[in-house]
Amino acid sequence: MANLDDDYGTDVEIYVKALTTTIHADTPAGAPAELHVLLEQLGLERHEHATGGPVYVWHTVPAHLDANEQKRLVTRAIPALLLAGYEVNCTPDVFDEAAYRQAVQDIRTRAARPAAQQPAPVSSPSRPAPARRTP
Image (cartoon, rainbow, N blue to C red; front, side):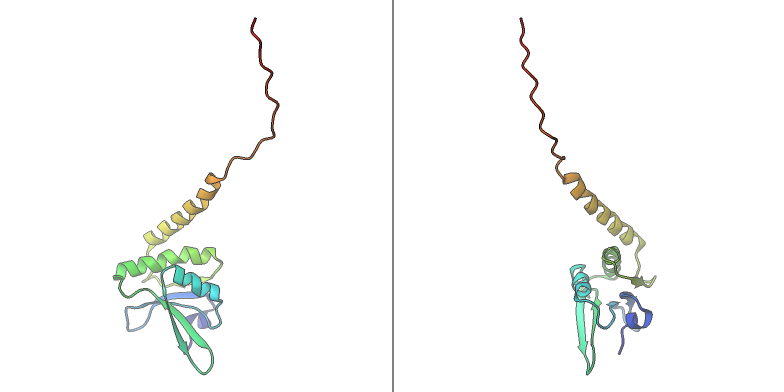
């Protein structure tokens, strides 16, 4: 048993498992725990299979979602994975272009918000202007 990532050298391989309708997100053997946590935070469900050697870990989209929602969920995860520095491959039959664009836009919007909310730099105190006397 091996994950596709082990074969292709990516961090995450997203595809529909053969002879099923289940969308998988495979990670390589020994993938960092942070990657698994991120996939779970992005809405994917973690699965494990222990062997006499390595423990194989993979993620799937929740089965209760309809097919289009499943594609949107996994596609929206891609920009966050890329931003975190992971190499991702997604098969075309799973990829949803509109969901990807929206996810990228959402990330850009979130990134721009903190900059807009930062307080203005404090200027050096100036002396108050002398009071004017009127005759």
